[in-house]
Length: 500
Ligand SMILES: [Zn+2]
Image 1 (cartoon, helix red, strand yellow):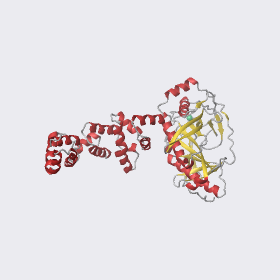
Image 2 (tube, protein in one colour):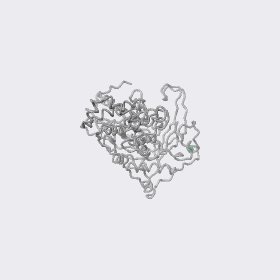
Image 3 (cartoon, protein in one colour):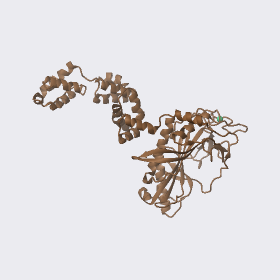
Image 4 (cartoon, helix red, strand yellow):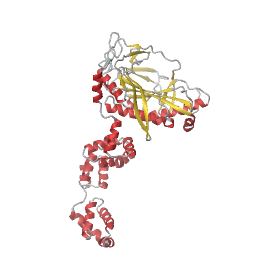
């Protein structure tokens, strides 16, 4: 195999226009499998969640899981698809050791949900991704190749098969070709996967964990010379398992295919594997000869004909979807487009919303999560949501500020204490002695000292230059190590100097 010459990304985009297609598999979080009653929990001992049906033993018969069908209809409706009135399952025949029946029950020419779309935003621009189809199928088992260095079958000494995953309900979402994205193609692909994950998560039908494989993307990329009318040959990069990898896989394929084409070569239609460590794809299985899966209607299952009443019921039960939610919070929290994007990108929406639910006002909740706490999360290299502080605790700190018991400076020390594991806000305040000094007697003595130390400033204030009071308030804050109530200190200073 020759090493492909990669073309510089900007040069590639100047010469070629990328066309994308994304197929996403999502495992539904139903309690039982698609066609049998086996449990579906992740991480169980191998081959403990199996039965004659999902092992494909002779004489066993599948029965469709109603909860799974409800789940896929939810996804279809949320993606603006039509839900067909009648469709069938089909058998997709091929031999693979992790597929005990030697066929997969899937859907072929009669998918359940068709013709949808999902809007995504990239750098302020909206892209409408057309959805070709959403269909129902069952997952395969998992092969474990032992003894090789890569975990792949090549070089392995032997292989083991775990059928726990075989038969778990799997939804496949297929886009139509995504065109006219230009140099944004990798970002559009990532934005689509991100929005799709948010959407499915909001429906509560899957945990959509890419690192555990409950959401996996196959990314198709082809290039055509700028100005050409005909699409190029596409490659299909399989099972990309993080959002960042979706973006990198598209970028890498654009650079690789541009290199192949400009060297006078041709892009081979094949599946490819993405490697996290190198950020590159390598060749998998050639798809040059169209595979014939000998699809035929599944004889062991009746056709599906979801009643219009049932579909309407499911539609009425849909929760607020992410795009609508973003529009609502933008209005309620009074955010600019940019501020909204920052909040979303920081993963702070749920945290701020929960903080507000515990009594904080929106502006304060956003301020703490987006500034002080985001800074600390970055310092510690963790996600905002993984900081050891709860929205309820942030709301408690804000309540103390509103009651005049803390100022912002002290609040930061409270956050520091909570994050250091010193307890909740009240415990940190008590243990560190962080209460604001607003007791007039105590403040008064400090102010008298400050006035005596700053006689010239005091004279200016007496003469009517009220603005000079800021310097004395600063001195009071310094003298109390930030624990004075600045507003009350100012009032007392002006009172004492006859300027109020
Ligand atoms: Zn089973």
